[in-house]
Length: 255
Image (tube, rainbow, N blue to C red; front, side, top):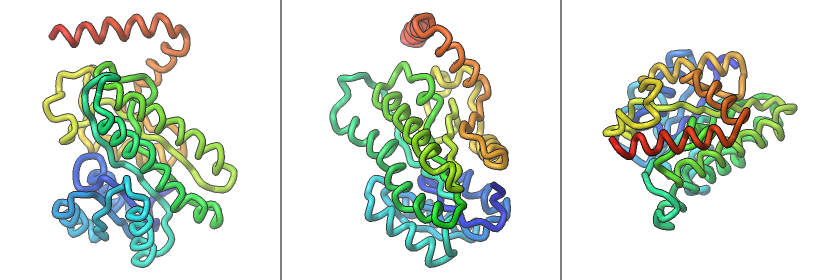
């Protein structure tokens, strides 16, 4: 799908990946871009910059997300592209507090569910639309330092797979964005972490990859191409891969 002439919505758009996507959609000639985030001030600045619509919104609140969709439709018309992008990252294992588990699940899974409920049936009825759900390479591989992140990002990938199967024959395209390290507020102070082994990219580089992959209408958006190679190694010999990940975890624990 070409973004030119389309209506797009981007959540988590006040900064980082979401802001870069909103800017790029506008530059590609989108007819309208609605941006959403809980950070109202920075969000309005993004909207002003691109001539879009700012809708303060907590993506974990289904009513708020429905209101976002309604506001975007009222301003620009039917939504062609919905980028469900809000996220959070915390270190810790299974001992992480329940509140962190719930927040990760709400942001990384239920926010995508709410977006799909709000727009996918309408897209299918029109026979055209695109869902871009931000997950992570951790959703295809894992995260050796964060159970909450790894588990919920895996769920995000599984949901995107389900949506692609359920809606693919009805004109709705689905892609899942799975980067490694991207230079954002979320990765500040993590420049030497596991995810940056293959280099930390800028959000603008990621946005380029999103546009290119949407043009091809492929499911996996991989700004770090080596992730595909790692996936193949994982599925070829799971036990060997797990042993390698244990070594990686020990290496970074010692540094």
